[in-house]
Amino acid sequence: MKNKEEFLLKAYELGIIKFGSFTLKSGIESPFYVDLRPLASSPELLKTLSNNLLQLVDDRRLELICGVPYAALPMATVMSLESGIPLIIKRKENKGYGTKRMLEGVFKNGQNCLLVEDVITSGKSLVETIDEVEKEGLNVTDIVVVLDREQGGIERLKEKGYRVLTLFTINEVIDILHKYRRLEANEVAKIKNFLSEPPSAPLRKRKKLEEKDIHHPVGKKMIDIALRKKSNLIASADVVSALELKNLAESIGDKIVALKLHTDIISDFSWTLVEDLRSIAREKDFLLFEDRKFADIGNTQELQFKQGIYKFADWVDMVTAHPIAGEKSFSVFDPTGVIAIVEMSSAGTLTDNYYVSQALNLAQKSNNVFAVVAQRQVSDDLLLLTPGVNLESKGDNKGQQYNTPEKVFSDYFTDFIIVGRGIYKSNNPTEAAEEYRERGWKAYLESL
Ligand code: S5P
Image (cartoon, rainbow, N blue to C red; front, side, top):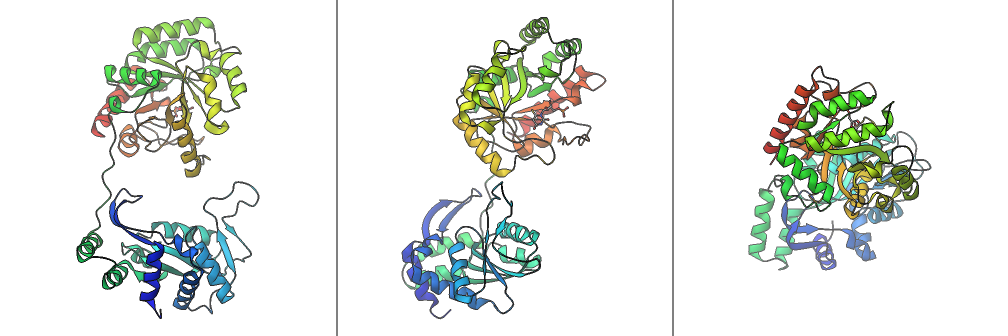
């Protein structure tokens, strides 16, 4: 680059790099923070930068240019205008309708594509982007990157056979800013020290049940029962007759925090059954949990919850509902506690990362929701319930996928495990429930 130093000093004035103390996505405290998006605010700098990126590669082989969203999009656009090489646009998520493509623009299978990225750190997200672009049938020949944070990204991509060309390394940037007195010697030392030994991400932590930020009365009750019984076990009683259900409740009631029901699978449902369940629940100290998975507009859900033959509102402590219809749809369950289904356990579920993050936001905002069903760690203001737990099986032939209790407590920091067939299908449900209770509680204590 002709006048690298001059370019960098001007870019620095725009605020592309800041010094201080910043918490990165990984949880690491970094003494600097890089954000190249302000470059688009200076057409002159953007053009200089884009031409310099083009000079890094042999553009005769190139048939397409693609920027990694979002910071590199303006750079890729200018590179396309300057070189005459067509641009394609990569989406962050597919839009869920229409063509469902991850790449927009005109391209053919087998074309060579240059990827443009603003900053490379570990290279992980770049590897994911390359995979997505190659899945659409393109060859990623070269990758140009404005700044290498020198944390192993280049090596990771090299191992995978990709050539990465970078304009600046972070050490180079620090040296130039020091030379022109934008950084003092003590700051340089601190940053260089950080760069030579970047700290690893802090250990993830979980809160004890009694320390979690739960205000809903049903959530508090669940925690109290768990502590009294030393149990994180919710039994899923997916049996189909009233007699089986009562027998199961009697035989495992002492071990569990809640009995999860699918009332609509019971062939001989009656109000006597409800009375019996309520009295067993009172005697054995557990909650009644209807896993109805409501998924409609508020008004319909309200009718389904309060009317019909089951009249859940009159007798269950908590219900599951999908957040698909929006936050207000949860309000109709008040004062019954709501458990939002944000991520499912089954293979091929549509609850992808985008859905899960939106669903978690919604669950956090709702006063009715105190817990979620998911397969990942969630924030401390929600209880996490994890189904798909079984000691003996890896799954069924209908999509269910299983983990052990140890795995869900250590990896997801779950609060409660939901076990169905592992208990009610075993030869001795009482013993099986005791085993899940004991192993679950031990795994919970070890995860603290
Ligand atoms: O994602 C989910 C959500 C739920 S609530 N995956 C699930 O398996 N469940 C429920 O948990 C499911 O409806 C069933 O009642 C129970 C798991 O049963 P199991 O026999 O596979 O342990």
